[in-house]
Length: 182
Image 1 (cartoon, one colour):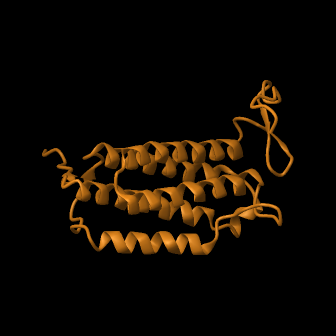
Image 2 (cartoon, one colour):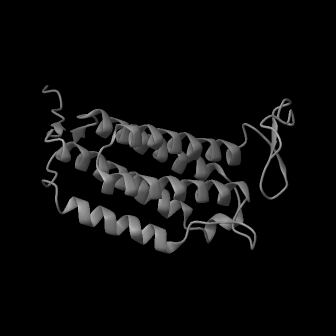
């Protein structure tokens, strides 16, 4: 890339990895933008973190989010594109099980918060939930075979567990939600 700006998007369109021009507010670009936003939120979380294993988990997730964005931008997997694989979904499930087994059991809803790191992980979790909803707005046959929806679903669960884990590392208890009494 010779320079950062190209002026090609000045009229509200952008070029996808599959070569098609898309309006910047179409479902495909909205989903990709939300994945990028989640990745940036995780970047903030990494700056708040001091635990090397947790940083490694977050860095892997950030890399996976670039892969997810490439899959969306290519409008599905092709021989030239990257895509989320079942193995990545299973890795998230293993991480959830591993960390959740170290946490106190959940018996009530908790409020997002605690440490700045846990709070930022909750923010990233909610952005991933939005990316999951935006993915459903894309009308494309490739999504029927894609692992991306399962990955995003598992990722939001992973980020929830990572937020609780971050609080535990800092000896900060999760705050239980107490519904209003009538």
